[in-house]
Length: 445
Image (cartoon, rainbow, N blue to C red; front, side):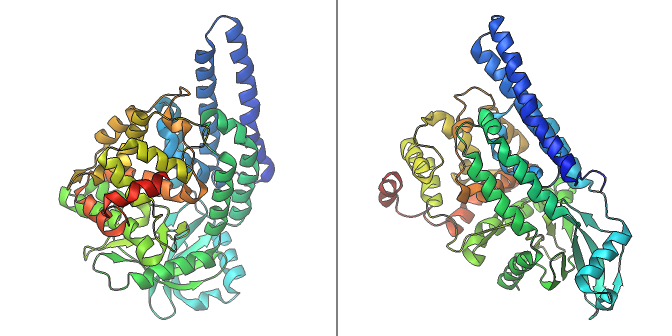
């Protein structure tokens, strides 16, 4: 636990370096202006240094700060590579190398949650964790009825640390406004705090996982291990073997990577229609390719509850984008709150920003690649006030959806998948293939 600064005073002090540091740089900027540098150049330098400081501190903290950083990943295209690259590296290190809890602490949590006789629930229990994440770790065990199970145990104090981060981050709204002036940061933080509180609730996670397991039971494409038992800080699920998606990315054949990517997209697009929920943490570590060819899915702590399926405006907007009517797209985005009333955006710049999300739906078959994504991102990477990414808002109802889409595109590019993605959108996203004559008025009105 050495890299999780949990004491409130430590975390507060670390977050407090942000505004103080920014104030100092703003003063430095004023001095340079007096020295003859242009105001725009000074503003850009201050913004870049502010970004560097924000991402440095976010990367050093787990918990709420890390969740915020993940949610803001959609806006990384607005920031220079040299700013976000160290931040991404820090996040990856945190995710991949979380230190395990001492065995004595694991046993203490199990005793508190399951009672002094907790061992009677298991025929065997492996004290060494098989996986670790930002708020908990997983142990392999054998349940008393002989089933192999995964036992997820929440870090003691993780909840307090997570929510404490948000109390601090809420004070930094103006600072983020320097980088992303079109974003309603207060609402985004509020929404993320609610979602993080849900992730800490293992009862709620168990409910979501069980709903997915029931819906996909016997499915030809997917497997979700069912819940065996749950408590506030302990979640016991059926064990699932398989090849992690991260290994498919690095070692899989082209055929295996194509299959994995297609199933990955099918799962994300079909879930809102089938379960009324969207898996909101599409990290490669949460997916496995099973020996029978199915995609196995883990970790339902972060889900977006969409009882009516995907937002109805999604399909028509994607179709209209593909038809080239950017005026209708702008009107639709403005109506949904992505563009605030006092903001004017450049339609061509907006098209370039949206292309990675919509372009794969315009053709019968599409290949994702790192090179394609880099070319897309290159068109919107600057810190000028006119950068379209910095002018966009993220309505709270879309925070998790965009986190999923942004992360999903990244995973598909890592896989290098070639597949008929358009078919999946036609099948699962309402309005994408409807009669186009009916929609523009409804969107723009």
